[in-house]
Length: 75
Image (cartoon, rainbow, N blue to C red; front, top):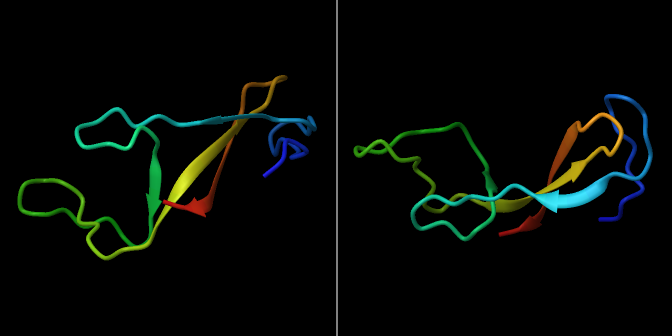
């Protein structure tokens, strides 16, 4: 992905690339999008076994600070 995206909030071109950090227990350091409706397991955690996952890439608008999130890379 490149930084020629246009902000959907204010229209600025040239969003700043970044990521959303996941600092929870057993995290990989970055947030992931998991396909399907959220289902909770018996201990309250999300059921994710066997579901496709994608890394979340984030882009920030330098003008209005709006975040655009994309799930473009398999995790």
